[in-house]
Image 1 (tube, rainbow, N blue to C red):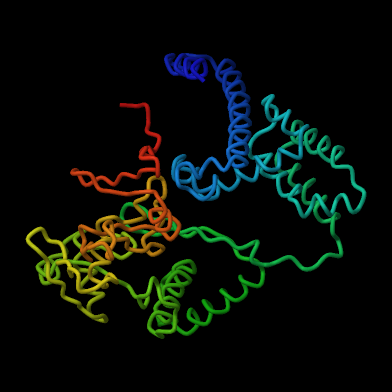
Image 2 (cartoon, helix red, strand yellow; image 1 turned 90 degrees about the vertical axis):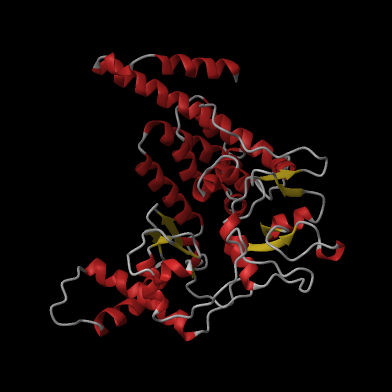
Length: 401
């Protein structure tokens, strides 16, 4: 690994913009091949770590979760890497081509669904030779573009079980909500045909019911407004499932002075999921909502409730959410609406139900800290996590300073 780091340092030292066009393209080709080889070793290491249950050493449930928290990968990227590592166990020819740099990680991810346990069993039942299949996939991946490889894989899967049961529609569903710095939320995803029909029917009913004269909104704006209205309707109906023991609602935290200030007051209010809102928007929401005053101490934090209550009341939970934002266990970051409020000093041992004695932990890590792991805040307010043997779990940091 030291030699690899030295080679990368040497590559970074030169000014690539001084090179000619042919040299640029040849260099890019070589770097792509090198990246493929590194990706192959990464998939190999991840698979070995998964078999060893190595993630548990850092208090994490799986390699997928470890890659998200410690490797800072997106959920999709972490899942693809784990699936690819598993698939390569059964595709030695493809693994060899990958290790040689002739195949990309993206191509391996395309092939991986063909060798799940269920599909390997189906192939053996039909007398198919998995070694020949491996050679075919490796040859196509090394010589054709990814679209052609995908068609080969899909053709194989379709013929593997042509008369099988209708696939589970939920397998084709996915939705990602990404939040930008200004609080704007971007939606990206896909639905199966049935789910798509249901959503379109719901949105279209709202769009067609609200067509005022002179409406100059685009079709995209109409559908976006309809989706927000659909959420409004469901929240107002009051029949949604409880969210961490609390009725789901739009919660905005803002100081009383800012709420009453007639100016816009940008970024003075905070939404429950982390959005920064102006005081003007908070006032707009308050027109159709409830205002719950909370008594604060001299530091601007909600007062604790001492020993009178074991269960954390809503105003203390809100304060913990505002401070911690997500699960504080090293490498986790699970969103606050997945989390419990943990007593750092257990209530049964004299710990108070207060902000200072609380930490936000997801269900898994709440269990971990009750079975040997430990979280604590240092004097600077930073959360630290320790294994049962007393060693600290350290998240990998950048070498840049």
